[in-house]
Image 1 (cartoon, rainbow, N blue to C red):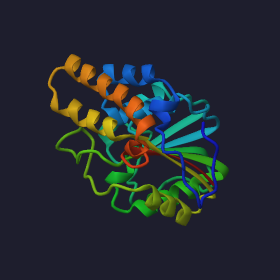
Image 2: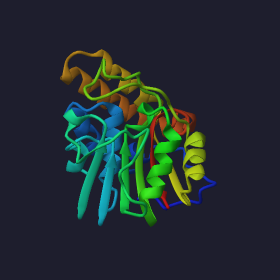
Image 3: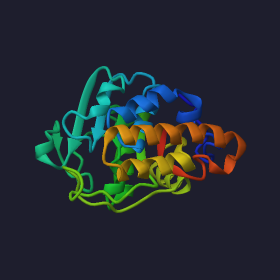
Length: 242
């Protein structure tokens, strides 16, 4: 896990943390399983996240989110979603009332959800409220990614926003988080890779094209830092501490 940095600073490295710093094999494995590149990046990043212990609340993840197969969670796990068909532990609207006491959770999770909420500041404020002091929030948001709503995926409602690193820093700081790490995940050829995957019909062709793009990204990034995730983020992984 990266070192938590002061709230006034962001990750300064131009290198892609997942592709350059962890395992291309893990990333390719996720792609082979049919995941989008942005989901593959998120899952690969989750594999290096330490265990979450105590009480963990997942906002917007549905009943049994697939990332629980990757993220190591012990203790009590509760999730809240507005859609009953998703079978969450608690049915509730993220834009209104949260039936959770203050200082009740050790960890909160919000993956691929904030872009679907119009009152985004309310969501982050509530995440901070329900966390105990020194509690941790794990968040992933897409940036360069197609519009996705209920017309393209089950259980989605609408698609309102994309957030830059600077806007995320302001949003979490305004909510009361004291230490924030914001990691860009992507790179120029990883972005190209994502859209090639959407365009090709057959999985084997998607995999071969995406494997090539991942290799090119790792090579070119060493020669041309301006092709990195810092400039071309597919998404951002945020670790914020109360």
